[in-house]
Image 1 (tube, one colour):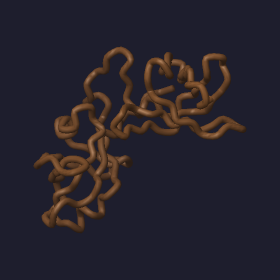
Image 2 (image 1 turned 90 degrees about the vertical axis):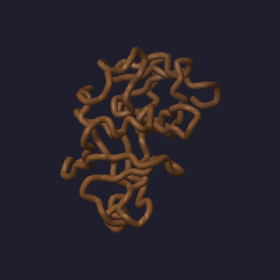
Image 3 (image 1 turned 120 degrees about the vertical axis):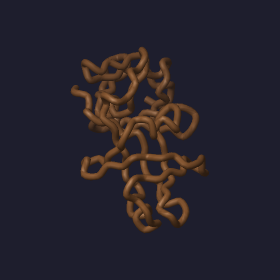
Length: 169
């Protein structure tokens, strides 16, 4: 599996105020790091923005984006993901992964049975959860992304070995 060249580090949650400021949702371990990676671009790469953080706000960070000066322009960007070139991100330690690297990996249980593929990675405050899109004949599955439940992540082989808790498999 090849790594993506760009990684989504945040998203625009909508306008904040009436002067073109936006509310950012940062996906970075340290939320304010989103402004330190240089210009961020849209998924297609057709627009890029310099980010200046202004203050913490409910559900994220207040920010000014270059070339966004009105509330209407900020509103039009709601839901837009913000991407950075992988080369500008810090190196990760052992057993640390960018979500983009996990999405699409095949997931098998410890006995070798196919559970599906990682469809998404969620975090609602209590740790990462892998959303597994089911294999044929299986429903989707949500797995806590912990060493106990996911003992093996092999990016080079494009697979994850999971040991779902009793009742989840």
